[in-house]
Length: 300
Image 1 (tube, helix red, strand yellow):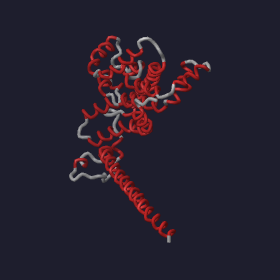
Image 2 (image 1 turned 45 degrees about the vertical axis):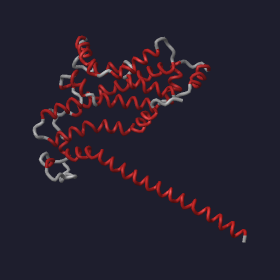
Image 3 (image 1 turned 90 degrees about the horizontal axis):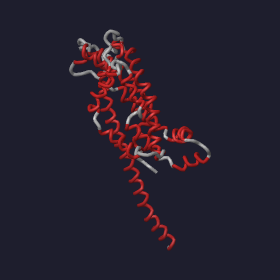
Image 4 (image 1 turned 135 degrees about the horizontal axis):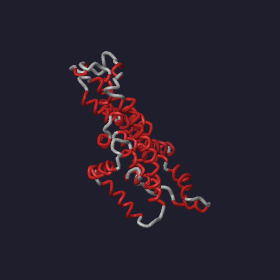
């Protein structure tokens, strides 16, 4: 009888625990399902303008304004992408854009890495002041330096060339990029540098063998940020480029949108051609982009 009472008491105590565990598990599954549904709805809202622009590029110009609007085109007119070179020379504009973007990304990333490494690891006089000046420069609006820079480039005879758009990235690649690289390098223990230094490694060997492999996400993030900035930099490209043969995608698209005659489908097609390369590059490195933004400022 004693054994039966003990077993019954154990069953009485165990059952509530199992039921509570199952209820918590069911609530967790319900919360995950609700979160997934909300995520899908938000993603659909974000992707809707992109789909609407793509579907408009495959319609006739008059069909775009029909009410109620169609979610899918009645005829998939891929011929709308055959835009005349006289109105929108996509390949010329793409070549000019890459002529600016590739040097900016390459040299901007390299110089931001060098400056960030110097601020994070090297010891020199005025280091804190220079870093404070670098970070403080991010508070300065672009419009403040726009006119003085234009006058300087004009005096050197470099207006209507690609040099004013590429040379600034030889000087650090941007204050935020330097700050980002510095914060990442500070998450790496100094003991690794000291061990390599004892083995006879110099600063460049430490940078290439220890620092760069450890902060690869930060390097990709910096490259993506510079790419997005230069790809979408309509303001400076409009100011410094005046010849049509030197137009970029942003300037060429703006000119085309200002001169088209009821060719709404062609306008949407040109817009899709302009943003597709940038979207593909961002999708390729979005994982590193999110990781870099999340880890910025963390320090061991």
